[in-house]
Image (tube, rainbow, N blue to C red; front, side, top):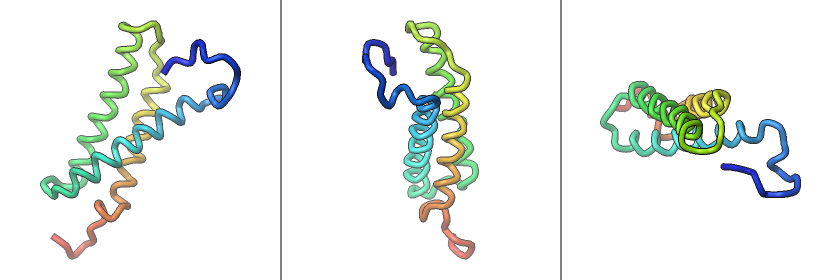
Length: 107
């Protein structure tokens, strides 16, 4: 989101807060979708999480390209990297959650 015209200095002026926001949003994005699809119990866990990581990362990088060509904002590889790392962390959170950690003896 653009911070132009907000005026004043507040939370937005903290260095790196933009990357933290990207990281958090994509971690939550992957955790919620991963938890949802795991409750459907149709796909193997590692395959499902890999597909979701790839989709989320492609979406994050795609939005950066969209900003570059269709808005007055710039492309940021670091934002895309924060999106990807957030997606990976979200996948690990799914594996550690009750949805992803089904135990060894369960089908």
